Picture: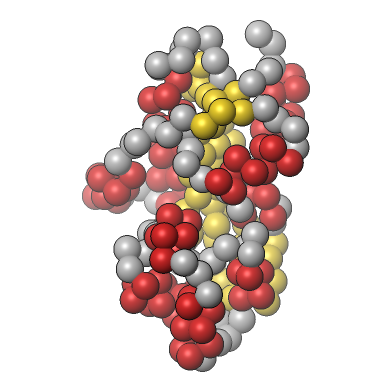
Length: 194
């Protein structure tokens, strides 16, 4: 069974490939920022925002591809209930790392599978991460290793690369932290009846 991945994330595609799940990428082009702002204005918490974005991406693509399973995904960082967005500049990336520095936060990964424009399954996973204590200079040195496009597309840390070194501990599934709670997805697809 070949699924459609409604995400531009190369890391998510790679996770599916690593687990032998055949997929093709169709980018949803959902305006994430306006949706986040609208949900925040209504008092939504980071978990609800993550779930809604995954669902919207999945449904939008699914409505254009009849009878296909479409996987949408979204990940957000939450520190003390506050949503941390992807940085829009290198300066903002440094401010985010300073906020996470020597602190615990949660990374929430939501996935949704849709068919014919309707959600048929969803799952949300939350992991706890504690960042080590770094000087501002050390954080700047870390950021300088990351290409600007990667930083703006994927956020301030990449656990699939050097980002693991930022953390004192990680409580959660590493694939989920990279963007896909793959074991739950496999479980659903295995039991899916066409």
